[in-house]
Length: 108
Image (cartoon, rainbow, N blue to C red):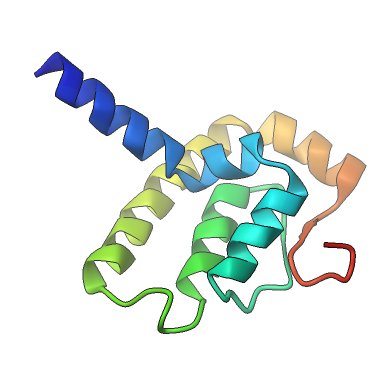
């Protein structure tokens, strides 16, 4: 049971929007959202996990084809909001230093 719990927690953490935006490069984030066919042009670094999930939900209908997946994004968005709040001092600094994460840019 402990191993199953550890695997489940690892899966949830690695799919968390906040974890993804804090541990990935801007290029990786942009590539992932482009692959999902998101229409977002940029996401702010402050509350980036929530913004990342919203961009994933605001993708083409073929990227999100199941209501279950949409439910998972909504649950993750609630958890990402809490985590984003905890890391606000860091993300405010990063937002000031680097600006938004560009998704639709010729740079990537």
